[in-house]
Image (cartoon, rainbow, N blue to C red; front, side, top):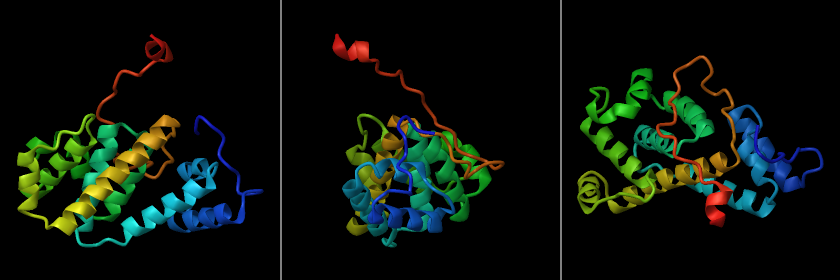
Length: 199
């Protein structure tokens, strides 16, 4: 469910239908974020190309990237993203114990020192405003070269974009983690009302 109607495949332009087919092949189902983006086909195609380019980067360990994305989804408070990220994380080798421990990762023995550092980085990027300190970035540089830093930062920033887009349209979980452990959103911020903006 979303706040606006999705674009049905029937009657959509050929490029949109092609993206729908690719999405079904990858996820086994229609995806609401893609069907909402389809209202602006040019953006949908550009977004899809960005996702494809991101998926072809492999200088950083996939498990670390997935952990970072999952943490970002939880920090930004996107239920849809937490659902799909938890499923992808399990496929990448993240354990259910780690998913359960993610909200308190700093105190958990489930994570290595490097994993905790990457989770610190994902958390700092995903806060509003971002809180990446010189000290944190210097610690990251001890483990990652510049190309790896760009790759890792990109996946975290992309997850932030996904989560904020999906949350704005109030997309509900799609059942990717149904019956399994699923990360939950970590913080519920006070909503901004139209009246507050008008004041």
